[in-house]
Length: 359
Length: 89
Ligand code: SF4
Image 1 (cartoon, each protein chain N blue to C red):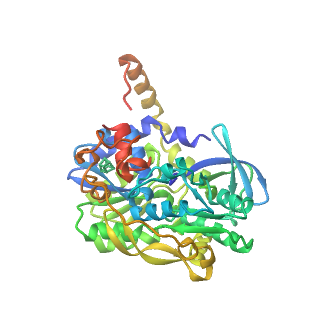
Image 2 (cartoon, protein in one colour):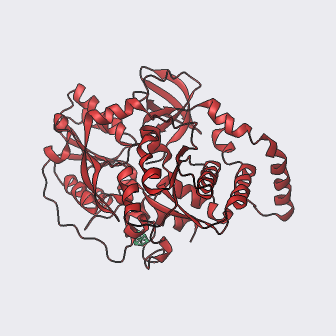
Image 3 (cartoon, chains in turn cyan, orange):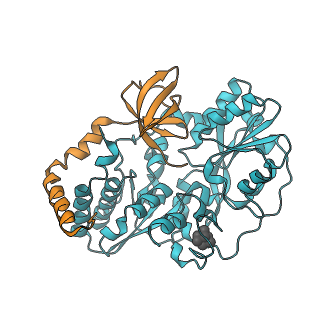
């Protein structure tokens, strides 16, 4: 079975492009929430296959992009502590903080290691008993369960030099806030991998409350085109609902074991999102039962004052109000090799995707 | 980081599946899908070192088989592309 090849099959993509053209009579604006979708849409040039009536805007679903500078600043501060080893996903390393990045700190001698999984970070903790190992836990519902599993394991193994600095966030508050604040969209291309964990229930509010649909989509061109078709159809027939296009992966109830693990380890807190500000119950913090593994509680540091970069409109882009090309720094001062804002650093960031595929 | 990849399970040892993606192989924890009864040959979705879902092969084939009938169209487009030496899609 060749999953990928077949979901890139051009006749199917063309078929949906045609179907969309056939049924779309009035202008519709769809937001793809997930950064992975943004990347795919730009890479495969999907906007060029759509009729003029259909507009796509990207949303706040790039975890690196919505993470606060304050978070980076604190991570930088941790990395300057003598006995601390920072373990992180690669995406975060070049994100600018107020005065430094993890990459720069690493160059000047801090022990910062890129890991692929929290399990690798725990291995480092096991092998370096005299150090404190801080794992930078970022990401939405897709990634948070692996952090939860890690913390659970650490607690079973009594791994006492391992700490997680959580900036994990949950998607629904951001999706609702955007509409509440009057962003003009007519439907959501729902995040496929977040929904793999959560199931479709977390979006049920949206059609009822805002009269717009959510279609949970896969990441290949065929997936996205079919999802757009489903949303246009809902819109044209005035029948907004939550549907799953990505049914080969997403079960309506999601991954229940992962949900239970999240519940065991984390509780909600209000959290700050770039472009959206503070959203109620949108962040995950480690429950006090597991505070032994919470870097915020266990590893104290002084953090410099946060300064936001001038001219970067990343926040507005994450709200779907502006496109990367509207930014005066885009492609000139701000490039993937010398990024000003987080949206240019992450491969899932809009500015990065536009820079690579749609300049 | 937020991306997840479908991969074939080649071997299972304890709770770790050894999976192939392209030419690389990954150790993948199965602890988030303990009840899925993952077997060698199954496809799982991997995210940051953990399998987060077993892929439903039947579902995957379902949507694709609907489009068998468009094979001809595909071939025609291939011929068009070759004729004009440009990529249509
Ligand atoms: S191009 Fe750079 S500076 Fe402009 S919004 Fe994007 S990340 Fe910010």
